[in-house]
Image 1 (cartoon, rainbow over the protein chains, first blue to last red):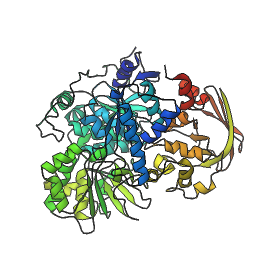
Image 2 (image 1 turned 135 degrees about the vertical axis):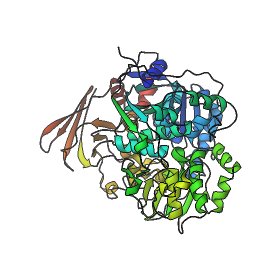
Image 3 (image 1 turned 135 degrees about the horizontal axis):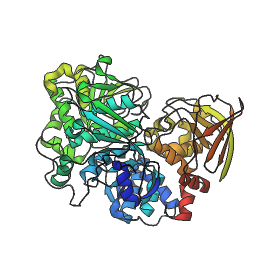
Image 4 (image 1 turned 90 degrees about the horizontal axis):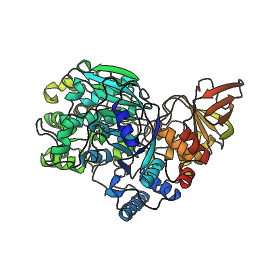
Length: 438
Length: 168
């Protein structure tokens, strides 16, 4: 028998079987997460399934991030129901304003190497950055898992993605993620896992790995997984390394739980192997209305931009805001008529940005700072674009009407490219502002 | 298990994401699928919601149901009377959500199917067939894993789970 991929190893451990790609296995879930976008329906399924209690309240987490603050009294009602359930069943609840679920799953130390995590939100794949098998499910699967603690999964084949080279000035992890999405296509990794490997993958800091894993679902992937290395361990056990200054630094351990890093076998079988030399990449842009409609920024320059959004579970971390603010503050002003919306991905990130003065400086420039949450990205809360607006965003999706207006056009880019557009009023190659980029 | 149904083909393209099926921003005011069905495909085909008939079968290209894992994108279709979706491929979360609610997802070559033609779908255990009456041909679908057949034959995850209480 050939060796195993990281996914096969984690699902073998979770199912207690020799799990191989293609097998359907029943797995014990280490943690199940739901949001105010998915839990209200899950509670309906829970009741209809005859659920009376949660299998292990310590392994279920609710996060209110989609409706921050509640934009409608009915949404507030749904959140109230979620709060009531969480209190009755002793389920951990992160309330409105505490952050986006995927960021909180990482910050809270719940995401650890070797674990099987399911989340009722497609971007739950983000957790693979810490060498976990993390995947998205719907509300009915969440309800069943809340009752029995298990889920059935088909063990995915794995595409090995080897990253090599050093990114050029002005090229960021988001550009690597977009380039990969363009390369594989929106369904290029459907039903499969991505395993990231190679020297450029090892060079990525943890917050950068989160960007690639987050976007892996935009290629259809069931999971996107990194190896566990000293950066992973430093993040979990020392709250993040200080050198280079980590935006995730908190000063204490994320977790005191032990964990076992999972390495693939040298003779693991992959469905496909691709190598991406990141030194050859330019800054990338995904044009409307598909995430895989990816071009070099040079093919999109001068497109007028009306609204700039920096935030989300893809691009709303301290490092992202620092990249953007270097360009924004050097210019000192936004282009006339451009609106800038800033949404930190969590309260911890918001606090760090407040302490170092970033938020104040951006607000003084005219940016609108919104509380941590998903709202603007999916049109569930916060500023919605006006008719015909062009938006550039650090988010992961640019579908028509994604931000709540079908006549708006959404471009996806790195925080630096978004900032460059904010100061010029049009899509701009961030390398043209090279002295401010790094 | 044997399941057979017939319906009118309604053609859609590639990469139909769940936000196109029903916009996330519509979920703010209600999760009532009887209300939300009026907004089906509003951003890509505003005439669709008015023209959908119970029994219609959606016929799509690749990657149907990509994007958000929101399950309401399945239940809204069912509220409009749609019982099955044919696609060249599905996003995995949509596929699971469909099975869990008793919406039949059939992965098959949809390329020659014409709008409005009558389709007959036959599921016999893991074997899936689509009979396209217009040119009078049969298209083989990708067989379903046995766990999915069990869930589907119970009518979805709720009745399955009420009976079994677990997946073991």
